[in-house]
Every structure is written in C-alpha cells, then in structure tokens.
Image (tube, rainbow, N blue to C red; front, side, top):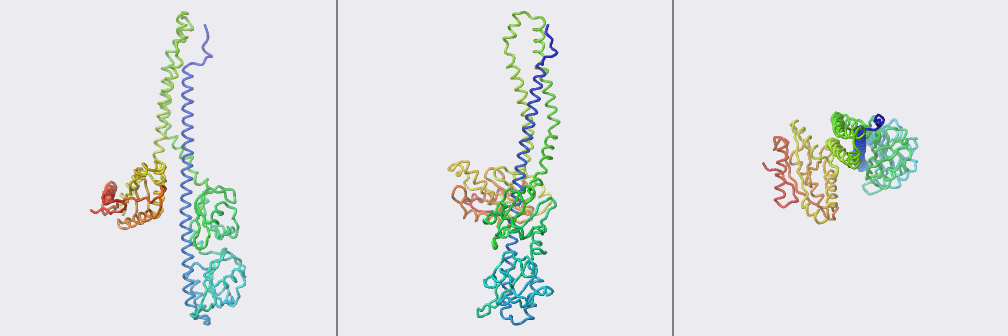
Length: 521
C-alpha cells in the first residue's frame, strides 16, 4: 500500500490555486486603482495650477495696465507744471503713497535730472538718471516697462515710465514709478498670499528667464531660462506640465504669460504633496472590502473540500482494494478537466465579487473620464447640499444641437472630441465659483452659486455666442440649446430645479435651437 502523507492532495491544490488567484486579483485591482488615482490626482493638480497661473497673470497684467493709466493721467497734469517744484513734489508723493504698485516715484526732465522724488527720505531729487535702462527710457519717449536692472542706488528694480509732453507737443521729461524687486512690492500684494506650507509656490520671470518675484527673496535675479516651463513661457506659451525644479524636486506646474510685458507666472506644487493621499485611499479601499473578501475565501475553501472529498475517496479505494478493471476505468476517467471546470467556476464567482467591489469604488469618482468635468453622481450630491442651505442657486441645462448627426457623419471618435471641446469651452466661459457637469450623453449642467436666473442667462449667452464664432473639432461651429432655472425663486428643491431647467431647455429646442431660455413660471 502506498503512503499518502507526503502527497499533495487535490483539496490542497484547489485551495492553493484559488488563494493564488485571489492574491493576483487583489494585487491587480490595487495596482490598477493606485495607478488610476495617481493619474487622476496629477491631472487635477496640473489643471488647477494652470488655471491658477492664468488668473494670476491676468491680475498682474491688469495691475500693470492700471499703473500705466495712472502715470498717463499724472503726465498730462504735470505737462504745464514742470517748472513748479512744489507741485511736482506733491504729485510724486501722492502717487507713491496712493498707488501701491510703486516703491518710489520720480519726475525727471528730458535730460534725466530728477526734479522731484518720493519718498522724500530717499533723497532722489537732484540726482541724474545714469543707468543704461533709464537713459534708454528717456530717449524712447514712449510708455515703457523696463526689464530688471540695477539703478545707481544699487537697488535691483523695474521702472514703469510715461513721457511728459507739453501742450505744444514738446518732450518735457518723464514720470517714473519703480518696483524694488528685493523689497516688499506689488508682487507680494498680489501673489504673496498664495504661499502654502506644503511646498507649493508662485514665481514670476521676465521675458529673458530672470526671476523677478519669488517667495524666497534670495532667488530674485536668478536666471532660470533652462527650466522647461520657463522656456515655454519665453516662447509665449501657456499650459501645464511636470517639471523638475533647480532643487531636483518634481513639480506639477501651471504657467501663463503676462500679455503686456511677456513676463511669465508659474504656480507649482510638489508632485509628492499632490499624491500623498493615494496610499491612504488605496488602503481604505482594501480594508473596506476585506470582510467580504474573507467570507469569499472561506466559501472557496469550503467548496474545495466538497469538490475534493469524492475524488479523495475514489483515490483511497484505488490504492487499497480496487480491481484492475476498475483501476483501468479510473485511469481513463477525464477527471482533471472536471476539476478544472469547477475551479474555473469558483474563480469566476470570486472575480465577479472583487471586480464588483472595484467598480463600486471607481463609481465614486467625481470626474467624468471623457470630458474632465464632474459627473452626474457628484451633481446630485452637490445639488442636495446646495439646496439644503437655502442659498440662491441657478442651473443651466445645455444640450449640443444635432449631436447625433455629428456622430453619424463624422464618427464617434470625432463626437468624443466635440464633447471634450464643448466641456473645455464651458469651463472657460464660467466663473471660478461655477461648477460644470456632464449630465449624460451630449447634455451638460452648469451650477451657479449665489446667482440669479438673469445672470445665469448672461453667462450661457456668452458661451453660446463664443461657440457660434469658433470652429469645433469637426471643422464648423457647434451650437447648443439651454434652459435656465433658479432656486429658490422658481424651484422648491434640487429635483424641481433640474426639472424646470429641462423644461426651459425643451422650449429652447422647440423654438428652433441655438438659444437660451429662462423658465417662465
């Protein structure tokens, strides 16, 4: 009689195969979730910093434009007072104290002699402008924003200048507002508040790649033209990308050009900071599904015992006391494939369970994977919260006109590009506090907090007119119909708000499409 103590039993083999399958499935699911979450968080951080840098560059641009206008007004006022020292001093002091952009203000004649300066304690009056940039500005006789340079005082500064002409058109001199780059300046006022303890920061470079603002003042004046993001800014580009900074840290950077000066604003976040929540998220997913997973494994072990028991009995019988004819029948029995089919069925059930759990977690994602806007699940949650607060809230429901014909004529790949294009245009046309959602198919929703129906209508109209003039991915403009409703003015709850917006959308389609209609109650 053969001993069986050293043999691998069928039950052990089945349990081993199932356990291996479970482990591989779990590892695959966790790895897939981990990679997907990393990609999503990275894309979200890049897009956030891109939009953020764009808004900051616009703020800087507006601020500089306003400063030029202020100097223009003063230059006209001073045109007839260049010989009046008292008036010049008063104007220089007024500008320096009231216009927060400037660290100092000087008024100089056509030869560069400073006739008045503020603050008075700087002792600027009576000095002559001798720097290369200063002389160039005097000769230029045009509104000028200089590149950074070192003045005769030793300060590194940027000068914003406006020429002064007499009523007869004779060049009398210029009025200068200066920004001291190593001192507290208007950059600190606009950008300084955007410093984060997690390592995120904002910096500004001029068109030659020289840092003119940084949260760390020691970096001001450094040339970083080899930085990939700065190279793109020097070419007038805007966007977002992963970049390694001078300290060797991977950063998720958004960048945007300042229109008037061709400077560039960069907002960036350490990649490690943006992704530090991934491991916790994946661990929570695993721990949430662990109890059900243990139940499934227990059931698999129990089933393996039930499947193996009859075959183990047959094996014992053949070893102990079966006839040769019976042994032959057992050898010819294709029992291996039968066992394989049973294991396969158990594994399919187990995989269904695991994938069901993964899908459950993935369904909780807030972003629509095609368009990049938020999905319907998130819309319902935000709507519920918003209406519970009893605050004013408007909804715009948009439907792309004749979208089916786009799919039929150009194909679904082009249709998908149109959806992504539409979502991008929708985000551009809305404000920072507005929320964009894909409701389903070619239908989208915009939620506008603290906004009445009339203002929501104006935003929708702005988007509609912009799309009318812009070619979409299939070569022609795409139009949409939209309905507007507001809470609590028209609707009593979130469900009714969407229903009323949908009714208004129906009216827009009925009226010929390519229009926005406010629900008329």
